Image 1 (cartoon, rainbow, N blue to C red):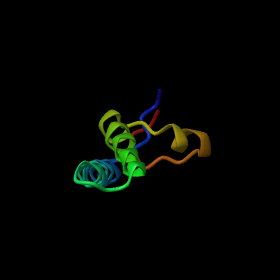
Image 2 (cartoon, rainbow, N blue to C red):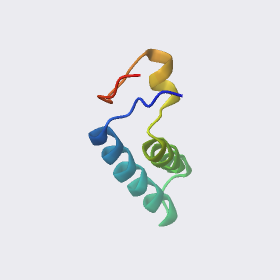
Image 3 (cartoon, helix red, strand yellow):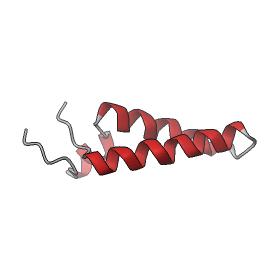
Length: 62
C-alpha cells in the first residue's frame, strides 16, 4: 500500500470528515456518516479511489 495523500489533503479530509460526523450527530442526514471515510483515509494517508485513478497528492516517491 503506497501512501497517496499529502499533508494539505489529509488536513482537509480530517476537518471536513469531522464536521460531517458532528452534523449527523446533531441531527443531520445519515449520508453525512461518510465523513468517517474521510477521517479514516486522512489518518492512514491512503485513499483507494486515488489508487484506482492514479491520483497522488503526496510528495513522497514510492
